[in-house]
Amino acid sequence: MRSRIRIFAAGCIVAATAAAVIGILGVSVSDQKAAKCDFIEYWVAGFQLIHHANPYDVADALKLERRSGLEGNKPRITFSPPLLLCPFLPLGLVSPKVGLILWLVILILCLLVSIWIIWVLNGRPDNGLHFCGYMFAPALACLMAGQLGIFLLLAIVLFLYFHEGHPLLAGVALTPCVWKPHLFLPFFIVLFLWSARRKEWRILAGFLAVVLGSSLITLRLDPQVWYQYSRMMSQTGLLHGFVPTLSVTIRFLVDPGSIWLQFVPELGACLWAVWYFWTRRTRWIWIDQGMLVLLVSAVCTPYAWFSDEAMLLPAVMTGVYRATNSHRSLLPIFLAGTLALIEIISIGDMASKYYLWTAPCWLAWYLYATHEPKKQPQAIPPEAMAAID
Image (tube, rainbow, N blue to C red):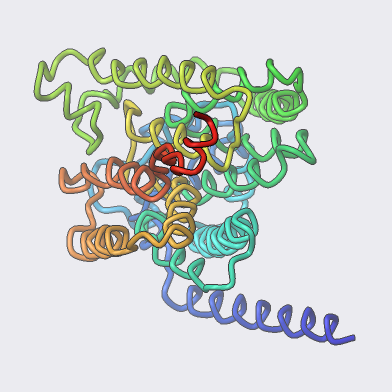
């Protein structure tokens, strides 16, 4: 009886909170505000597909965004491939303002669910540290920009939650990763090797089934979508500009015109991931070794934004729990998290070079927090030595 009362009370609190959030967003959000954040690119894609038009058309995007209040001549276009555009379709049925409100509410719910699952995966510790996840700067940056990073976070934590007991659901959960596949290449290589070794193909089957179904729906709405995508990618010069990642920085330091250079770190990460998995294949644990692969994937990616690092929250929080259990100081992650929060408040622009340190910092934190010193061989007591003699 008490458990039912608690569940009912929790449901009432969640419902009241959701109503309050929607009310606040309804007052503060407008079409013009929607046009100024990254969310608008997903609304344009959904609107265009609903009307059987090109979701990657720059001229149409400019008209639609100007109608919503965009100032300037640079519309936002989604660079996600046509593999999973279907989730954007409902956005095209409503105005940008309503779409942004629904988008932000869903992002907040996804963040709440993700942090709860991370807490469960780490043994439900009774220390309240999981509340720190709500202050993870990349997740807050994702909310501020209306970006996809929190959906990528949810995809990872659902995979971790379902991969043993419900592999088909785990594969379905991973499908949002195709919005930004370059962030996950080493991770997916290890997933394929892990599935092949276990002869467990349901994860990949669930993943491919959803991606294929979404692709067919998109092709039905716009048969030329892949041609339009390739044309847009070639015309926009996506990879020519600077973004604060290790790979792009290496390219600009060595030869800014040689775009292929920014793919070298990811190639190295893929080779490392194969070696790392193979040497640990008999004791592989996704919440452990898999988090390191995810971090290396993010550090070595050829293209990423600060908000994409929201997907690294499981690794960061796992490090927090491991450090607490081993009595290591939490000061490093506290300082890094605070500095990142100061940056998104004071700088804002995620193209700033001052965000270059964050992904390597999360990796360094995880290595520090989870490092297990080698056990020193115990000295043989004199009594034992005498017995041996």
